[in-house]
Image 1 (cartoon, rainbow, N blue to C red):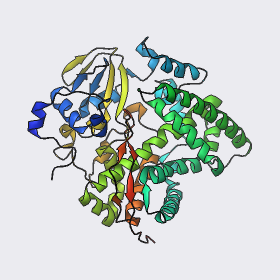
Image 2: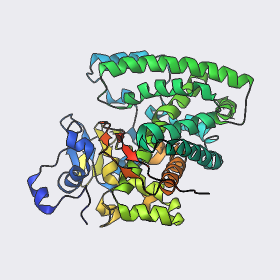
Image 3: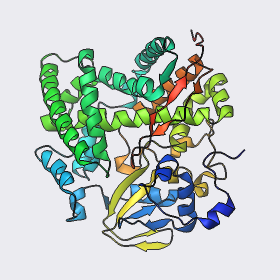
Image 4: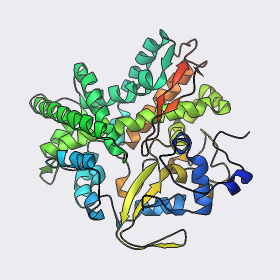
Length: 420
């Protein structure tokens, strides 16, 4: 059966390969264009001057090459709109996020954080996460018709990270509002109005986290925030501003990725009834489902690097200094790597964990294990509790270039079943 993202040979001959994230059709479904780019122009020069690579091997090579940079300063002086300058100036007194740091500074910070943010520590949250998800589903059962994003996908990861950090539940709504204003700063097409909102939200969140850190230093607990405060290696720990930057990143980038994993993944399953039935009836898929859903419709579509040395990509010589965007969503569907089933959803896919949705190399996402655990529990508990779940109106998309997700997703939960 032809899936929604397929294109046939005739169409391929008529369409010119391009990467245009401002095209509404591209934002809704970029996968046909990714296929054209992989086949016709795998190292594509965009209208913005940078390069986009779309084949798995090229994406993997760029992400893992140590002679690339994520630091914006290395790109030299670039003309930018006044509101982008305003945004950058507003954060000049704070250290950059670990996302925007190269080694050795990136290595120092990551080594410290990894001592607390471990897969074992995250696995300890599995029982708590399951309880939180089940409690939320109990509440939603009374409503029946819901917006999956607003009422479920958006709530789960925020409640989980709030609980992990050991922060008061009473503060959750405020922190969520401030974090949401900051999410758009990860996108290149942020508007002046969104910049103003982000500056306000960032100020509020910084003030709140400064107070929370002081409180936790006086009353430490068995939680991630206390562990981050206490962590040290060789007599060195995280500074106050580094702590604030790291926690802000957990709230902003970490939360949004999981929201989109739950939303995108549920939509993919509802569009593939055979895979939906496997989730209902085969608990063995729990070990592979999150990775396959991440591969099939990645929450993070692109990741940029500047080349610090010349590279050979798909047989094309690329000079040092080029800004290269790695199309993660395209690499995850490349049949040259995944075989002829690359465009199909297969929740039993045994090598699904080789996807690049969380990047690769030194910048591989610190929160990957947490996001996968949350996504697996949220999606499987939702579907098994509400096996009659159905889409009531076509979901809308968030029109973002980096973080792909559904904006509104109306569903009817149907009649719940008892999982106990």
